[in-house]
Length: 277
Image 1 (cartoon, rainbow, N blue to C red):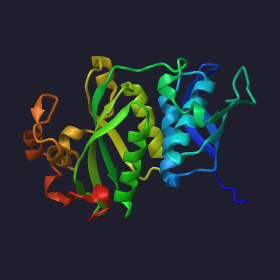
Image 2: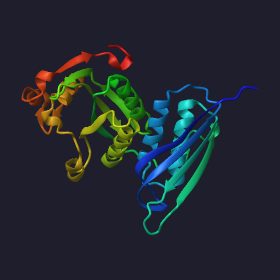
Image 3: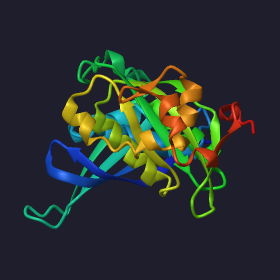
Image 4: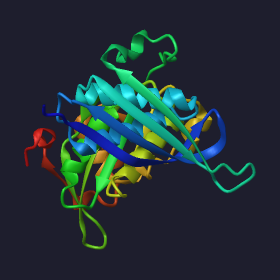
């Protein structure tokens, strides 16, 4: 009898927190999906694992592992998913050699909205996220990032800008795009998810929260926006996506008119998200 499985071993997520252990630590995740019915791209699966861990950072380890298992079951349509989550020690006192949690879910468990043990997040924020890359396959990497963001529970991608070509000061070529996201994540959670996705793609994409609604002044001041208000590589695709948008009270058209890199930014494709050039 033919059998098959999808296994991800040692997926590393930096700066995660678990209730049972102090401080931020590196978390290693192993996933095994038995008899998958859907052939999901590996990049999509890796991104979803990282995003789940970052979204649930600060929760009990079993809760984090369960969130990963449920998401993997949804993406692969597997009826049997096992997740092992390991938290390494940091060499400080107390010096943990490593702690491990295991979670096993079946198709009857894949209904997180009905699970009373899972907290329900209802507060929703509108966020604008910039994506920039200098790799030749930037469009493919952006698509994978967007799928991973949309796959986080509580997230919904609501807008995607055209793809822009950018010429940098050193003469190198790049690409940029902007995404509108509705999310139940806090600013800190969303930043951690973006940091994890950046790391998962080995730094191939630079991503920033350019704007986020419904957060406090301290959270807003702490955001790393990548100096978006002075950069046409962010403002131009954003204005194409939402011509009425403002940043810090100023219309995007006003900011774009004085952006020093405006002559070096131009639209490349308005249908790139479905694979067009």
